[in-house]
Every structure is written in structure tokens, then in C-alpha cells.
Amino acid sequence: MELLRSRGYIALLVLGAVIGAPVAIVAYFYLEAVGRAQRFFLTDLPHDLGFAGTPVWWPIPMVAVGGLLVGLSLRYLPGTGGHNPADGFVAGPAVSARDLPGVAAASLATLAFGAVLGPEGPLVLIGSGLAVVIARLLKRDAPDKALVVVGASGSFAAISTLLISPLAGAFLLLEAAGVGAGMASVVLAPGLLAAGIGALIFVGLDHVTGFGTFSLAVPNIPTLGAPTVGQFGWAVAIGLAAGMLGTAIRRLAFQLQPYVSRRVLLATPLAGLVVGGLAALFAAVSDKGPEQVLFSGQDALAPLIRQAGTWSVGDLLLLVACKSLAYSLSLSSFRGGPTFPGMFIGAAAGVALSHLPGLPLTAAVGMGIGAMTVVMLGGLPLTAVLLTLLFLQADAINLISVVIVAVVVAWVTAARLSPWLRPRPGR
Image (cartoon, rainbow, N blue to C red):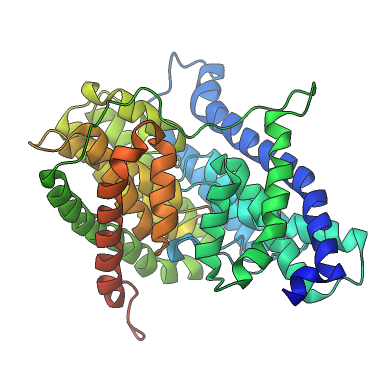
């Protein structure tokens, strides 16, 4: 309460409101650039080169080029290009202005060319770094403790751009940072203010039209109805399976990382070749496009659920296998966020399992998304439940109980398997 009453804290709140809009603008155009680049390299470029459509082999050179660009960024630009995505979602200290170009370059090369990672990790780093830069421009002698809160506020505003909800951003950063007790509200309030002001960039103010939003909700999902006893049994089974699958994906990534770090300019393009090859293999065997395996899966998730009836079980299982391997390779070599590929794999597995008795589609997808999300985030069960319900909000009330059970079971299972996750020293 003493901190809350201080003049310095009022200044922090004002600063949070000031940085919200510019950070949200940068985050918006970052996401817009990613979307445009993905469409250009996967769809427009082959058409411009004279192909009737996107050749089945096209992802192989594309992801390899992305890998080369990531390797060059990691080798020659300052910093590490961002967090290691295999560690899950990490809310660490703000990156310096010197390291921001490396974060932006490595993440854009990752996302634009089709590696299987998402934008949330880079957004957090870019938002925090940009907020600290703005704070130093406004007040050169700002104390380090204040800059920590300012950096968190920038992360808050940036990630809320993607999640379309300041409250969802609060859950994610609160769990990831491990902020405890009464200090949580004090530390996060400037960020909440920054995210709230930043949201005006998308929704508009008075007669000023906003940019528009990136909607996460999946429309027109089948109505679930009240959960059954059998669905709770499925929640336990799906949670156990997700705990094992997610841990296996992360373990392979950790196993590969020492080799990648020693030969980054060779290993990262090679990983890109394999990721592209997996996408080409899936497109050749199934009647679906390579984009199902490429990219984070954020944009493909809603069509997958809405068009579940057009997928065979065999294609779904092949998709889960190819996406999981591509995801693991991307975690080991590229830079981006770990959230959305896990959600997509969980949804695809849920669609496949919904062909079994006693498991409705919406329940299966919800449990799969939540369970895989908590494992791939490295924990964060509250965030995993909230993100699942944001996607499937049309039936959130009926889903919440079974999703919570699946998430908790997956979380505990992954924790029990965590000693197996990383290679032992000396191996």
C-alpha cells in the first residue's frame, strides 16, 4: 500500500498509459507483416514464378532459406535472437535496444518462411524492449526497478495485441513471471493500463476507426451440452497422452540443440529442409496443403475444427506426426513462441479422437488444446485453460470442467516426466 500511494507509482501508471499505444502499433504491424510474408512466400511467389499452384516440394527450399536467415541472425547480430522456445513461455527481463534487431530478424525469418513456431515469444521481447527505450527517452535517469515494471508493461501491451484480451495477457505474464501475493496487482497494473490503452489502436475511439483485431475465437463449433462421466474419463486419458507427447517433442528439441548451437549456419538451414520436407510429405500423401504442417497453426486451427468432417483419421494422425516432428525441429533451431503449434497439434489429435465413442468433437478438441498447451508452455495451467476457452468461447461454460481436468492431468504428467526432458550432463 505504501508503494501504491507513492508519487513514483503514479508516474509509472502514467508511463504505462503512454507506452500502450506505440507498443500496440508496433505489435500490430509486426503481426500484419508476418501474415503478409507467409502468404507471399507460400502462395504468391510460386504463382509469380509461373507455377499454376504451390508445388508440393515448395516448402523445402522456403523453410531452408528461413533457417539460413535465422542462422545468420544468431551468428552476426547481437544477442541470442530471443528466448529458447523449447523452454516454454518465459517472461524474462527486457531485452536491450541493441538486441532488438536480432530478435526481430530471427523471429521474422522463422515465422515468414514456415517454421513451426508462433509470434507470442518475440512479441513479448519486442514489447518490453521498446517500452524501455521509450521510458529512457522520456526519463534518462529512470531507476532500474522502474524499468523492470515498464518492460513488463510493454510485454503486456504487445501480447494482448495477439490474444485480443488484456486479461488474457495478465494471466499469461502473471503465471510466467511467478509474481506472488499482493505484489502481483501492483506490478501488473501499469501493464494492464498499457494494454487497455493499446487496445484502442484496434477497436477505435469515438469516430476514429481502429485497425481491426486478430480474432482467436472459432465460430460455429458444434454445441456440446452438459459434460458426461465418460468425458471426464477421456479428459484423464487425453491429459496423460498430451503429457507424454509434449514431453517427447521438447526432449527431442533439447537433444538436438547442442549440435545446432555448434554449427548454427549449417544446422539451422538443414532443420529447415527437414521441416519443409515433412510439409511436402504430408501434402503428397494427403489431399491437404503443406500449410497444415508449416507455420504456427494459429490461422489454420479454426478451419481445422470447422471442417473436421472433411478429414480422415489417417490424415489427422499423419498431420499430428508431421507437425510434431516439424515443431520439435523448429524448437531446436529457430526463434519464436511455443504456444500455437501445441494448440494446433492438440486440436488435430482431438478431432481424430472424436471418432471414438463417448467423445464429442468440441470436448475432444478443447481437452486436446488445453492439455498440449500446458505442456508446451512448460506449465502455466491457468493460462492453458484460459487460452482454450478463448478459442472455444461459444461453448466455454460446458467445456470448462473437462478442460481443467485434462490440463491438470497433463501438467502433472509432464512434471513427473521432467527429469527425462533434458539430456544428462556428459551425454
